[in-house]
Image (cartoon, rainbow, N blue to C red):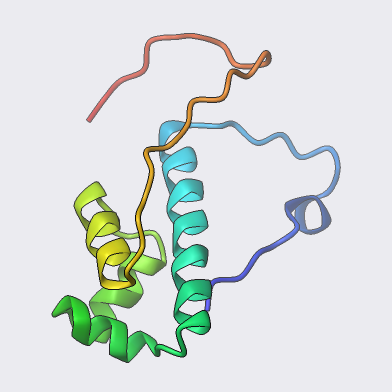
Length: 105
């Protein structure tokens, strides 16, 4: 099961976190993974059951739910396997954000 951590408690109040595309993508993946786990709990569905529905090994599903290789296609497959719909991420203006070109990979 995914865990939530209090970063301030772990690293202190003066820790400055740089939000990068990788960090934001990981955060979004973890938020989605937490929703998947909660939905499985509601449905009394084990991760083994979910992996069988998806045609994946348990280890591959575990990797996806731990922030590795979670693509839009993976998100859609997980949502459909759980009988759920999924919405596109929402852009939320951030007054502290700096618009700057970033290198894409």
